[in-house]
Image 1 (cartoon, rainbow, N blue to C red):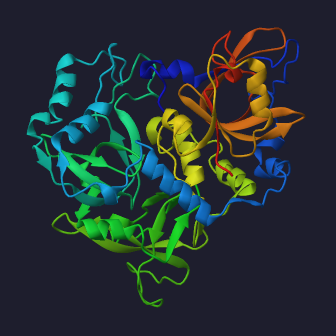
Image 2 (image 1 turned 135 degrees about the vertical axis):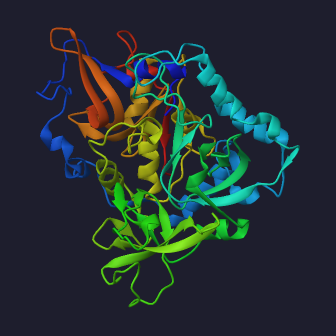
Image 3 (image 1 turned 180 degrees about the vertical axis):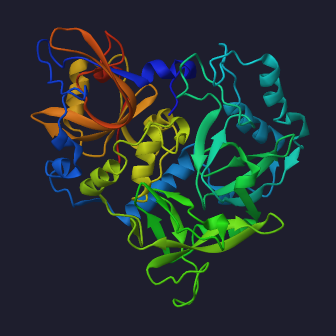
Length: 463
């Protein structure tokens, strides 16, 4: 998700494109998205070009081994079962300080007005850094609703410049219903927890976490049988009897256990015959963890296990987000570039670090790294070996390789906009701000640097 420097996020997200070769310009349709047509917006178009689309790339055992290596070797992943009974103060300070850095440039509010220093100072003070004890005993909890992870304990919306309200500076990521967390600190006002989740550590609203014992929280993710959410965004059924689980949103990749109830027992005023009865975390009267049954209609996209990792499934899952609004750190009820590819892979059981820069260099992933010494030709040769689902990184951005059309590589990406040269060499800009299908070779970071020459890494999640 994060661009470096962060304040330059808007500039780098405004993707630019130009001809792959001098005089060779892809057609520009009425949509303004260069090199595309309506046929390309269907997953079947790309599945037909994939070659052995249903062959399993990695089986379940190989994926579990990959995930184990990731949690063992990647410092951006957290195995909650290994946190220990106590944590030193320095560790909590390091986690909080890692994300709690204010940009040096002025910040603006939702009305494009400068944010007063007093407002920022209050947010910083709410971290309660002086209240961290020398030894911290983690508490454990489950997330009860989709909720933002913030780099400061505040809902204050601030932006890096005027008109840049797609890039909220206090937004880091999002956690989802059923996600386990370790609570390691509380804000001064008591309204925020600093939590460690398997893929990120940041501040969340305390009301979104139901705390329980370590054993019950960690056991929740291992319960079986379960359902894996394979649709983009599903909702449990409406139920006035249990508002805490009524129309709860469940995003792609979530694994949620089934409740152990008789098949004829009504659930929250409704028979369960045409639904899966999930067990979702909620708050008991005292605020502690309570598991509540909730119905998910069988007609919705879920599966009894993670989907097989195949090219066809990668394409189908990615296209379920096609046209979804770009959401920095999963804002706007959407996701950003790295959140998009992570959620697609998670539906097949593959875990990835949260941010694009961390994904690009993760020691557990198979990647081809690029540096200043790599020529344009060497980069093109690497792309010639790219396969469906490979992840292409430039500074602060990631795209998923889709396939080729007449030798032209195409990607699917969650992206802010496209700037490209038309047939007369003039620069044009098309705002996308959504999950989009685009060609790769025409894309530029600026009028001199192509995406190909800006590539930092090509990650392949395959043997």
